[in-house]
Amino acid sequence: MTDQSLRANNPSTIATGLNLKEHAQTVRRKLVPLAWTCASLGLFVAIWEFSWWQGWANPLLLPPPHIFLSNLPEQFRFFDPTGGRAGALSEGGSIWSVLGVIGWSALRVTLGLSLGFVMSLIVGVAIRYFNIFGKLVLPLVTMMAPISPVAWIPVAVFMFGIGNPPAVFLVFIAIFFVMVLATLSQIDAVPPHFIQLARIMGASKRQIYMQVILPAILPGLFVTLRMNLFAAWMVVLIAEAVGVGSGLGQVTMMARNTFNSSLVFFTMTLIGITGFAFDQALGLIQRKILWWIGPSSIGRI
Amino acid sequence: MTLGLSISNVTKTWNPDGSSPTPAVRNLTLDVNLGEFVVLLGPSGCGKSSLLYMVAGLEEATSGSITFDGLEITQPSPERSLIFQEAALFPWLSVRDNVGFGLQIKGITQTKRRQKVDDLLKLVGLAGAGDKRPHELSGGMRQRAALARALAMDPKVLLMDEPFAALDIQTRARMQDHLLRIWRETGASVLLVTHSIDEALALADRIIVFTSRPGQIKAEIKIDQPRPRDLHSPEMVDLARRCDALLAEEVNKAFAEQELL
Ligand SMILES: Nc1ncnc2c1ncn2[C@@H]1O[C@H](COP(=O)(O)OP(=O)(O)OP(=O)(O)O)[C@@H](O)[C@H]1O
Ligand SMILES: [Mg+2]
Image (cartoon, rainbow over all chains, first blue to last red; front, side, top):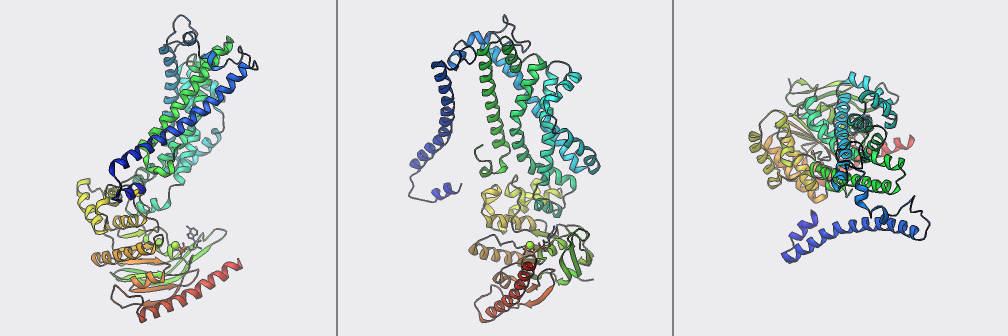
């Protein structure tokens, strides 16, 4: 912003040269991190391939990328497009079935995350807004927060049986309590001057919550949500492996049971890429919608 | 009934029942007349902010009473607007929406707000900045936006807590000019806290020098000189010296006390 206006004030700068230079800078800014990502990945793959080549890594147990990525149609066969039981070898077989399976996992994560975000926001705000409700609920939340989502698996199955609901429920549980506590600490961290100002301007308690506290805490909560994204992914994979009977987690479990190491690593690759894509998508939402954290404090997460 | 602000025998103790009660203001009596410009000058931590918060209605006095136009102050009100050292603009609103925030709370529609807000932005010299976001403004511009936000509520008293302390000297001088012009145009009373003797001399009808904590009135200095004032004139230099001596005494006392702790 500042150096832009500085340059605009400088009459000697030629407009086209300025644009070209700026353009080059933007491209550079985008390409450099990308190059590092590729280098990081490349190094990892290179070490792996090298150890296979040297004969250190048993290709049956630790097949290097060029092996488990070489026979894609063979791998695709294990992915059932309907999201039903994986391993139905006759049904699957195309890239679409792979995307279908990823889609089911992603859908469960998205549903669980959205539900968890909205509910934790409502409960968190209610704890501070309604005094008695807060006193009754807060100790409960604090006690439930440290319970691992894995411990909730039997509960999820008792309550929802098998299928999508228990998986969504587990993702929800994985972030709900943490996010309620995050909401509370965000509310307590709202600058007192903001609230004092609103009071002076004649805002009611309801108006202060809706028009000052809510917009003030949303960006921070979104950051917390993004940090919990990976936890949500881990939980959905476990849930799928244990009880849901479909999705990426189920494919991994099946691959393990049938001792198909190529499929294990192929699925792990898919999980990594999907998680990365999710994180990028949340980052984009954060920059576009919740811009008021200010460009400087968002940084380039 | 007295018009204007009347602070009588006010004491403020923070955490009165707690383990470490902190007396911030003790037995303070001060009247601010309609349209008067009063500057509070005192060492750090002597309770100036505490006093402003009580006048704003954000904090209750431990004892004594504060009235405005004869009515006891029990809660905050837009007619006693407070301006902080940092502008405290809402980062999620445009400058225009920030300035119109109080009007919007009052339920005035967007179209009706627009005219008034744009007039105010012009008044504080921010006519072109209405659509900007607060983080795009400089410190001085932000503080002027905060001033406009307060003025939108047609306040009868402007309470200002070191409003220009975070600005550089040149910007500060310009802001003081702005403030004097607005003060004259609106006819509001001003109660302003500052650490700067020059600022006090440039602005005040009356300077109140505080003692160190708990704050009490140490001296009162009336200035009749017309504004803008030449701070290098013999009278002003004289006044500056007097303020300096008064303050130095209290600062020394405050330091001695802190060293004992
Ligand atoms: N909310 C609070 N709770 C407890 N103590 C407080 C509170 N606010 C102020 N104090 C105490 O009251 C005393 C006076 O503080 P105050 O902020 O009014 O001083 P001040 O004159 O504005 O100082 P400064 O010039 O540094 O801003 C200080 O000792 C401070 O620690
Ligand atoms: Mg203060």
